[in-house]
Length: 414
Image (cartoon, rainbow, N blue to C red; front, side, top):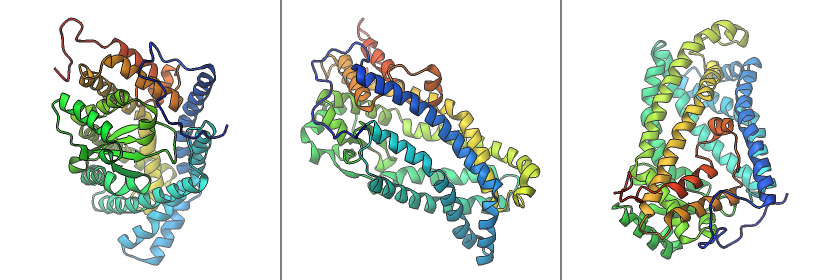
C-alpha cells in the first residue's frame, strides 16, 4: 500500500451527524488489521528489548567496553565518556529492527510519509540527544553507587528529579525543533487563533497566543495530533498542521479545549509526580534484585559487582522488567487524565460552540478515520497498550455527557 499524500479540507464536515464511530468497509478492515498488528507489535517490542539486554549480558559486551574504558583512563568520568556511548549505541542498534518495522507498517498504511533517509536522519539525531543525556546520567548513577552501595537507589532518584524537570523544561526549546518546524499559530492562522482566544477567555484563563504553536507535521505524517508540552515559561499548546487541514475550526477548538484541560488541570506536573513515585519504586526493586542477579550470573558475565560499569545492562534489564509489569497502571492513569481532558473540552466549548457534544464527536470521528484507530479494540489491548480512551468510548462520552440538562453545571467550569 503506497503512502497517500495529505488531502486538504475537513474529513468530517460541520453538518455531519455522528452517533457512533463508523468507518467505510475498506478503512474498517485497515483499522482492524492495523490495530491487531500494533497490539502484537507493542508486546513483542517490549519483550524484544528485554531479550536484547539479556543477549548483551550473555555475549559479555559490557565487560569488553569496560576494559576498553579502563585501558584508556583511570578516571571514572573519562571512563563514562568512553563506556556509556558505546554500550547505549550498541543496545539501540540492536533495537533498530523495531523502529524500522514500525515505520515500514506506518508507510504501508499511509500514515507515514517519511522516506528512509529522513527517518534515518531523525534516528541519528535522537541517538545524539540520547547519548549525551545518557552519558551524563550514567556517570551520576555510578558515582552514587560507588559512594553509597546501600542507598544509591534513593540518592539517584533524588538526583534524577531536577534532571527530569530540566528535561521537560528544555524539550520545546532544544529537542522538538530538531525534528519539526514550529511557528506561532497567530502567524500561520490568525482566524483560528482568534477562535481559540474566545475559548480560552470563555474558560476564564490566561493562555496568550504566544503559548500556541503550529507544527509542520505533514512532511512526515498524515496523522493528526495536538499536545501540551513544556514547564513554566516553556509550557505551550502545539497543533499539527495536519489537524488544521483535516478538521473544521469548531472541531479544532474542541481539540485545543482538550489540550487546555491538560494545561489547567496540571496534568504535566501531576504526571511528573506520579512518574517520580513510580521511578522510586522501580529503582528500589532494581536495587533489591540486582544483587541476586549478579550473585547468580555475574561471574559468568564477567561483571565484578553493581559498581562495575558492565552491570548497566543488568540494571536496565531488571528495571525494564518492572516497568513492563507496571505499564498497565501507567496506561490507566494516562487514560484517566485524557478522559478528564475530554470532559474539560466539552465543558469549555459548551455555550461557545453550538452542539458542542456533536462537534466533539465529529472531531473524534475525524481523528479515528485519519489515524486508522481500531473500532473494536479488545479489553486486553486497551489495558496493556492504550494511554488514551478508545475512539468509540470517546465518541459515546461526547454524545452523552450533559450535566446542564437539568440546570446543572460542569465539574471543571461552572
